[in-house]
Length: 100
Image (cartoon, rainbow, N blue to C red; front, top):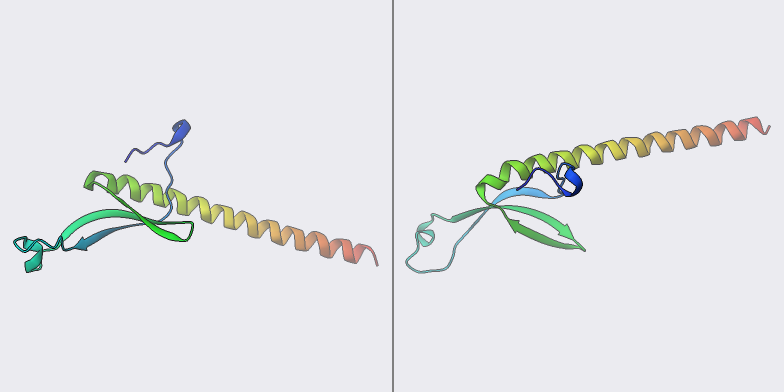
């Protein structure tokens, strides 16, 4: 997974990275004896449905970093929104008290 998105910006993704374990169903396969197949995946939601993207092992570190960037950006936006709400409440209170 490349570390850069469009325009050279660092890549950001939303979701979770985890290892999916499953049986393939072939009678002769090792997975039928309990050694499940493992695939790293990125899971995310789109229009209310869970989507999964299979990752190669070398994609996992980049995907995890992209997730960290997304979570950091989301926290920053939430913090800015809360500062905006506090500012709005303060302005409304000052306007109401000034009108008396």
